[in-house]
Image (tube, rainbow, N blue to C red; front, side, top):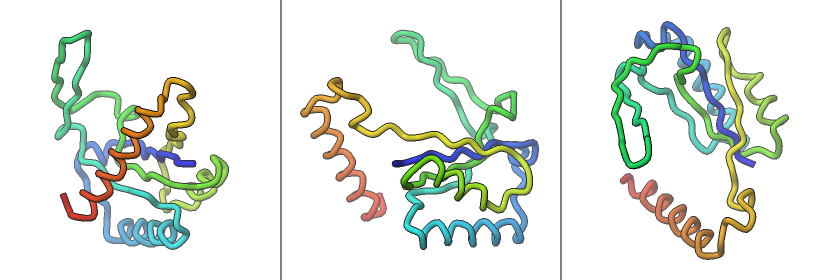
Length: 142
């Protein structure tokens, strides 16, 4: 099972305040534990919403909204993508994270099988092909 672990933004992350060497060291150590356990698929910090944009979709109309965005509590500062056996295992890993305050959300990622009959053999083949192509590009550095 894959889980997206969402690290909520705070006043400092939205202001672009970079973590201290101490915090980065602790995070590096935690990430290394995740890698050694074979559960980390990806993990990154995000720039403040002031450097971002949103695209609102209304039918065929697309509206671009530049950041910053209000409501810091609804914004993200980073994420991990974990491959674990259960939600409980994901929770146990995140309880070991070096964060001293804030909120971290854990959400299961859909797998192709979750879509039932809507995921036709053709769509499944396309999904497999795209994943393989993405992996090849990632290894090539593109």
